[in-house]
Length: 162
Figure (cartoon, rainbow, N blue to C red):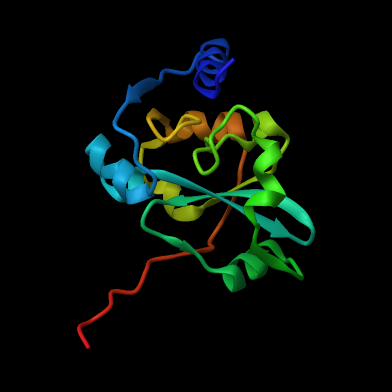
């Protein structure tokens, strides 16, 4: 079963309204937002972190970055760093690397969502490949994934000409 099929079955079982889309293959959060014609802040980027030795799924707006100092403070952790791909590649066997959906609960991975994601009524996310996305309401995402809400994302700095 593909990740998208798994998500569709899960959403139907949970009575969640969703949209599924296919698009040309893209890899970055901003590219996905562009091909889906949605603001970057609506695209739920998934980043895996190692927080005090435990792999944790972070969900943040597409254009944002993880501030590990803020993450440590928000979670009361001693150590927090971005995980290396080899640390989590086997956790998501039905997903392409870098295209995991924000439902860590389906993979026994705790989920932490940046508070800024709670401000919009819907989220768009990768559905296991770099060619498929799904959209659900933020409310349904929160109900199903049961994420911890914290403030750990930072907007990228705009670089000025030299």
